Length: 265
Image (cartoon, rainbow, N blue to C red):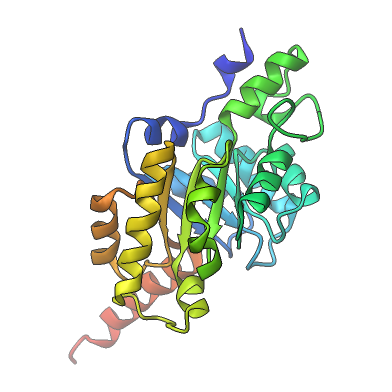
């Protein structure tokens, strides 16, 4: 058995086939049950948000391990794009890093460097890895398999990032560009204006650059606007961040409470 026989990334495979990937963001639930819920619900991927939650790396690692066993791809948004965070979440079992606030090609290259083993990057060697069921493989074989499966997702959350879209997307090792629309609109002085012409302009520009360089565009921040999600998927986006565990819980709870309150006596 080879390392590549054990380690597969279903999200990378779906994207390569041109299929749309559905992702759920975790900010609240700290236990492995969320991985099973995501699988049962039909999500391809969990996106654990360490930038905007009190989740620990320990809890994150447990969820990542459950995802590996269930075949749900797990990516983690780090609180800072540093090797210390990126290396730890990947060693813990994540198959992808989500790098917030990337503004330049130089920053994107640093993320890739931290996420990939040599020769593609400078990630420190650690063995055995949970991704390979803690089995021992020749170092070159293990590194190649993990590099191939590990995804780098950079977020565009500012006008500066969009201005440098072409050069960032061209960085070798970047797989997906996730547009963080709420932060982008706030940076442009247009908070919450999802229907502003700039939004379609940004998606068109990023999707075109992704096509040119063989990368993929992701939709984020539009959980309240399924109409716009559908529009940008039809335009060419292939990864959708659908919303958070908090949002899903509050929405479903509010619906049930309203159902009871609306009963006429």
